[in-house]
Length: 350
Image (cartoon, rainbow, N blue to C red):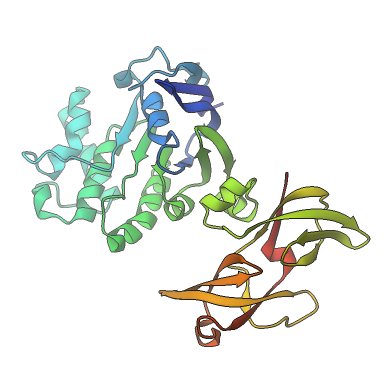
C-alpha cells in the first residue's frame, strides 16, 4: 500500500498507557484527521510518526517499509505545530526556504520552489516582507508554506489553527483544505475540534483512551457513530437506557420516556440516542413522526441556532433548532418536540 500504516502502536509513560494498540492506514494524497480530547494520545502518536519518540510496541510504515530505524531527518516528513515559530530575523521568503537550504538544495531551485508555494498559499509577492508586519492568518500560511516547500511525503499539522482568532480560523479551514488538495499533499491533521476535523479531512480517526475508537468519513461518523463514547464526543448527549424488541413492522425501541418503531433490526438491551438536531418544536405533523412533551429548562441563542434543554420524567435532553426561536415557550413552561424516529434515533447494543 502507498502511504502511511500504523500497526498496533503502544506507548507507556510510567504507569499510564497513553497509546493502546492504535492501528489505521492512510492512502497517498489523503487528508486524515486525528481527532480526540486532550490526553487521548494524538500528539504522542504524531511524535512517533515523526521519529521524535519510539513506540513500546507496534510498527509505523511508509509504503510498506518500517520507519522505526529511520531517523527523523531522513523520513521526509513535514511537521507544523500550533506555535509556528517563524524566524524573526528572516523575511518571508527566507523563512519558507529554510528547509530547502538545510537540505542543500540549489539556490535557483530553492527560489523557484519558494515562489511556487507562496503562490499556492496566496502570499505571492510578499517574499521580502517581515513576517511581523503580517496578520496572524498570513503568518500561519507562511508556516504552512515552509512545511510544504521541501515537498514532504507527509505533512503533519498539530493543532495548526488553535492559536488564531475565530474569524481567521473559520476562513483558514477552507483555505487549508484547498491548498492541501490542490498540491495532492498527503496530510495528517491533529485536532480536538470536531468541526475542524470534519471540514478539512477526507477521513477521520477518533482516538479515545489511547485506542482507535472509530475510523470513517466525516459523514459516516456523524450519521453512524459506533458507540455512546463517539456520540458524546460529537456532542450528542441524549443517551437513554433502553431495549430493542423485534416486531412485525420492524424494531420497537423502549425507554423510560417513550417507545418508538424503527426499521433497522435490533434486539436486546442497549442505549438509545436521540439526535439533538433532528427535532422540531411542536406536535407530530404526519404519521411518520413521534413527539415528546416536557418542561423547558433553559434556552440559549448561538448565531442561527437555538439550544434548549427539556426535562422529561427527571431526565434532561438537549436539542438544537435553526428556526424555532419564536416557537419556544418561556422557561418552566411545557414544550413539545417532534421527530422522525428513523432519522433521529440510533441504537447501540449493550
